[in-house]
Image (cartoon, rainbow, N blue to C red; front, side, top):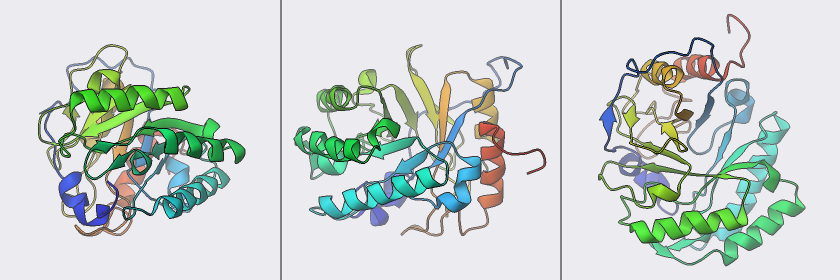
Amino acid sequence: MRWLLLLLLLTSCGGGGGSPNPGTNVPNPGTPRAIDFTFFGQSDPAITAPFTTVYFVADWGPAGAQESIKSRQIAEMQAARARGTDRFILMTGFLQFSGECDYQGNLALAAYKGQLDALDLSRSVWMVYPKDEPDGANCSGATMAQVFKEVRNIFPQARVGVIYGDTGPTPGIDQATDVGRDKYPHGPQVISLRADQHLILVPGGADPYREDPKAFVTMAQNNPQVSLVVAFLFVDYAGGKGISDNGMLPAYRSAGCSLTLKCAAGS
């Protein structure tokens, strides 16, 4: 989700395939485990840092604005780190693709990695997220597999994440480490994964969906393959108000506290 992203967010992250799963068929291991939680795209670390564990660094912006996007990403990573969040999900497609899914290679991304190295930020890139909903952009499996593999050459320490939409295909899935599918407001979605892959859950708390995160928390706590819950969407966007402004923030703060185990009792 890059140029025109705020206009396309409603459709781009507004649907996805997959099958609902209440998470009740997987035995609860008994001992609570901390599960990573963040918001898709920009958020305010002053508000979210106490109940999130990762900051999602979006690449939103118009085509051709790579330098301004990089500057904004760097500023956001530094602000998140200052608030105690020192792991990032870095969206990189603005440096790798032109148009919908015309892969340009990784030279620009490698140069950006050098900038992040100089600022001591690349060590905190926990996951690279090259392309949001590549199925919706009609990306081929071969293209996305190449993208995911080549990203690892630049960020070898990082996971490679992807969230698919509702069109059905999962291009490149075998080369991703963390995989999700969104389908608002139809509850948690499950994709068949290998044992060494991780599942991302994506509740849609923004308008018009206003999805209650409780079912996502339950599934995450009962399904050991869940690695991450990514809530859509903190900020306001073309489709309506975000979680920060539509009355859903208390529910998502509570969800974050339950998942991350960061919050003090009673918070």
